[in-house]
Each structure stands twice: as C-alpha cells, then as structure tokens.
Image (cartoon, rainbow, N blue to C red; front, side, top):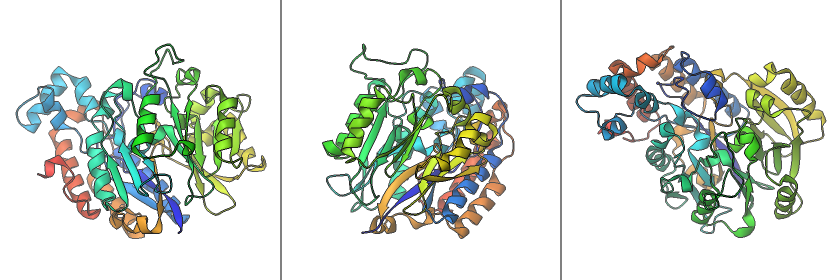
Amino acid sequence: MSYLEANFDGLVGPTHNYAGLSFGNVASQHNAAAPSNPKAAALQGLTKAKALADMGLTQGILPPQARPDLSSLRRVGFTGSDANVLTQAAKLAPHLLNSFSSASCMWTANAATVSPSTDCADGKVHFTAANLVDKLHRSIEPTQTTKTLKAIFANDNHFAHHPHLPEHPFFGDEGAANHTRLCSDYGRQGVELFVYGREASNPSAPAPRRYPARQTLEASQAIARLHQLEHNSVHFIQQNPAVIDQGVFHNDVIAVGNKNVLFYHQQAFVDSQKQLAQLQQKMHGNLHLVEVSTDDVSIDAAVKSYLFNTQLVSVNDDSMILIAPSDCQEHPQVYQYLQSLPERGSPITQVKYFDVKQSMQNGGGPACLRLRVALSQAELAAVNPHVILNDALYQQLTQWVNKHYRDRISAADLADISLYQESCTALDELTQIMNLGSIYSFQG
C-alpha cells in the first residue's frame, strides 16, 4: 500500500501580534510590542504551503483558534458583555488579555504528536494534542486543538484521538516540535525519536538553568504508551541543556529529520555519540546523519537564522529539499553553509527559501508552521477533503484573508471589540469553506 507524508500548516489567525509572551524564545522576546501585520503573516504562510503543494507534496491547512479567548477571560473573573470583558482585562490585567489573544496556534508543530498506523499496534493513526503547560498563552489551546483534529481526521476506523496529558509541568508536552519519525519509507515501521529537555522525576538530572525545558521525558514516554508504540520503534534522547539556555527552546530549532535523514547541530543532544549510535542500530544501519559542526554554524547563528527550523521534504526517492526561511539567506555564515550543503554528499540536494518573516519575528519558522502526518492512500481518503490545499482552496483562502484581516495590529487593538467581532465573522466563514462544522464555542 502506498504511503505519503502530508504537511498540515497552521493558518495564521486574525489577531497575530507581537506580545513577547514566550520566555526562552529569543525572537519572540526581541520583537515584543512591535506592530504586526496579520494579513501579511497569513498570506506568507499560504504562499509557502502552496509552493509545497505545487511541488507535488500533499498539503493540508489547519484553521486558527478563536481569539481573544473570552471564555478564558471569564474563567478568571472578567464579567459582563464581550466588550466589557475586553475593556476590564485591558485595564486591570493587560498581560492576561495579551496571553488570551495570542495567535500562537499557527505553529502547528506544537499542536500534537502524531504516530502513523505502521508504527501503532492497532494499525491506526494516533493523535495526542500537546498540553503546552509551560506557557500560559499556549496552555489554552489543547481542548480546541483536539476538537479541530477530530473534525479533520474523523474516521474512527483509521484515526485514534487521545486527550492531552495532565495539565502539570511533570507532563510538559510541546508536541511534534520535539518528535521526529525516522524510517526507510513512510509505509514501513519506523523509529519515533522523542527529544526531551528534562526528567521531571529526577531533579538531579541535567537540566537548563536560564530557560525552561518545556518537554519532559515522562510526557514523551506517556505518548509512546498511548500510541501503542513497540519498544524497538521508539528512542528517547535528551536535548543539550546548554543549547536550551542559548534559545533553543524546542528540538526543531536544532534538528530536523525526514525518512532516514537526521539533519542536526553538533551540540544538539546529550551524550550524542552514544545515543545516535543506538538510534543507528534501531534503524538497522540505514540512518544518514548530517551533522553541522559548531565551526560551520554557531548556536547563535542557528537560532538567529532558524537553520534547523526548516522542512526537510522528499520530492522523489533519491533527493530531499530543505525548505528554509529567507533569514537563512541573510545570515552570511548560514548561507555559506547552505550553499555548500548539496555538495557534501548528503541526500539534501536543494535548498529553497521562503519569506515567513511575520512568523519568524514571533519565533516560528517553516518547521513550526506545519504538523506532519504520514498516511496511506486509504487514510488520506478518510481525511476531510476540504482542508487539502489545491488551486481552488488556495484562491478561496487568499480571498478570505484579504477580506477579513487587518494589515496592522498593536497591543492596544486587542481590547477592541471590533477586532473580536471581525475574527468571529471570519472564522465562521472559514468553517464553511473548510466544511468543519461548528467547532468554535461562539458558534453556539
């Protein structure tokens, strides 16, 4: 049976703004309070997604969540009409209004961890939405994420959905940003690589000191159990605490994999040589390791350019393309390395650059914007077809963005009831375009 890997990109929401909410994410903090352009952000994301679809890859779109999240604001004591809730929050707790207005669900690499049917004992594709407990603005996402995924992957014969893990730092889970599936072919059993930042049950184990480790070993182990993964098809490896403290807040800022290729920085992991040897053994010696040395690219350069927050995609059986942000072109050290990459004897034969600066300024590159789902043809046929990007849907979504999105948002705009109403109107129309049903609470 033929299998493929689909990318489901997050559509940037109408309240995309720069509030600097993500401690440990250097770009997010650096651009705090700068004005944003939601329209440009959404169009940049759609352009990148459409380019991948035009390469022949299967490309889906995930809808944004409703923001500001008035239900969360009401849960913490703001009352009255929608306008009054926003006004009170802006006056008394602007930090809460900022958090509950975030469009961070655009980064669907954090939406969930996905295991394909070839890896799972029951032969189904498994989804576990990430609880994202480390950041307040993201901790409000998982319930809606699960609801959205169930609307798109709705066939119980093919798909299994799990509730997000308990909402406690012990089970801190950031989704596929810390998970990479390696395999010889999408349709064969692979090895699921879970990267964690700390052991919650072992306070004396290595851990970062400056910035938080958002993924715990215990969360990764729980997901492996939920997804019914066999022991030999799982590998747990710790992210280097020293690089977390330099702004590498997720593994996908320091490593990216596809099929039997792992593209990673020399300093990415703890006990790297031993761990990668064990991973190579589980891959039966077929893993192609592409290590970037510190001499070639420093950690600082990798974080600033998002060299590893790239998409590694297969266009045929013989070669892979690295989908990189245009920031990589603008960084001399990184661009020099990428210019030489196709000549270094790896399966990565091309690099294509895309402008996703609106996302990059908030700390998310091409890899952050997509959730990977390996599917058989039968499973793909069971996916809601109205979320699969083609020429017609791209045109509809582009027109929808141009109709509903603002081209400038500042922090003060988040208290504007008109922005909330505009967002609700836009998302209500989007559910009709994508045939999602009433997935939002404001729809009744």
